[in-house]
Length: 120
Image: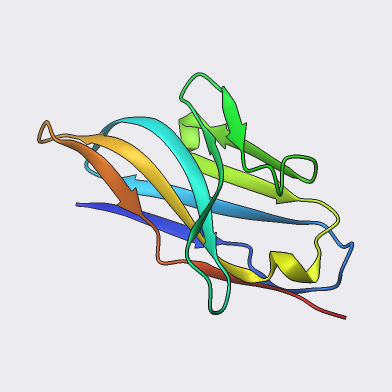
């Protein structure tokens, strides 16, 4: 069994940086890409950022100047630093990871989501 657990969300004022974390655990053989999506109220889930096991990154155009994705392979953890957050960043943030399990399967796993609310 594999689990992804996010942390770091909450209520933040516009312009105050925050960092989300997502730790993977369980029967993991290897982790490939990791990343984040978000879903704002009344909208579809949208891509935010992803990072390969080698550290290559990709961002949505809407966040590329303010969000920084990183990972710690030793801790099976992916992070996203959100600088200068805006009210439009308010959403539930979901992490994902492409994981090869000890049983030989490879598929996407998702976290349960963490709420980020940007408001003064």
